[in-house]
Image (cartoon, rainbow, N blue to C red; front, side, top):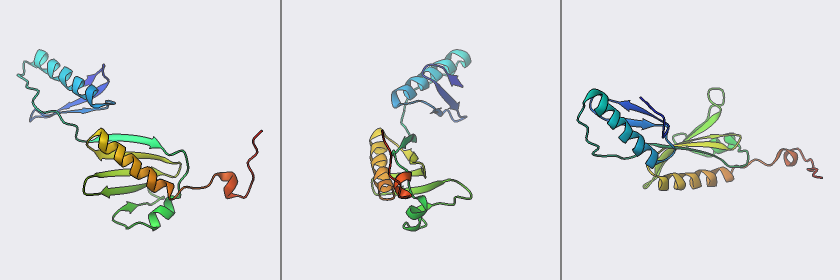
Length: 154
């Protein structure tokens, strides 16, 4: 089911669970779920209780502003933690499992990254900081510096 405002996709399962995809924040997700429940009640006559709402998987993306040496990052990490096969997928996959935080991130050589598997905005901020700090250690110099050229700005 598609909800227009806020823009969301709702999946309804046989057991009565509703999954909301595509919203930008938790408030929009809750509103979309309530609208879906209202539509199901009006159109199908289901008695619906909105009992437990919780975010299960947040997805975030960002850009570091610099390029990254993915090969070096992969070589210095344990194989169970990071996975990089440029012939198969252009991004490095990093599975982070800490005592308080668990998520997966995909890091690309351009400096873009995607974080999946966090359960709150706070965890997303912590994950973003952790990813950026790791990326800074493997930052590529600018193209002009890499080839020994001086940048010309005028």
